[in-house]
Length: 147
Ligand SMILES: [Zn+2]
Ligand SMILES: [Zn+2]
Ligand SMILES: [Zn+2]
Image (cartoon, rainbow, N blue to C red; front, side):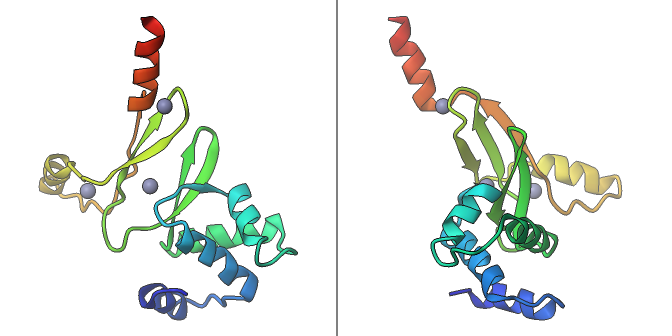
């Protein structure tokens, strides 16, 4: 089921939600907090709609991103999609250079920079910050190997 906020956003747009497109949105809702590639969305959507095609998935994901329902971001040369945080700045991502795991940093922590820019007359709407690191598990593994 779609929550009211999402249903309203779609109602306000001129976009018609066909059952295949709805299946794609439901995959994203069911995987809230995950960062899915179009291929992964296709796989999951096919559980319900075996005939769904890649082109439909790509198109639907991009339309939902343009409506600010999904956040689209490039990870490791591949676009990944996730459900947007409602009316909040995008959380940051920290990507492990060893295993590729994507973790989220929920704290904004950019207020000093945002305030600084607003004083200069900018109105900051959002940001898309990626940090590259070794995750705790990979650090531990490297330590164990070194012994
Ligand atoms: Zn912010
Ligand atoms: Zn790792
Ligand atoms: Zn995220």
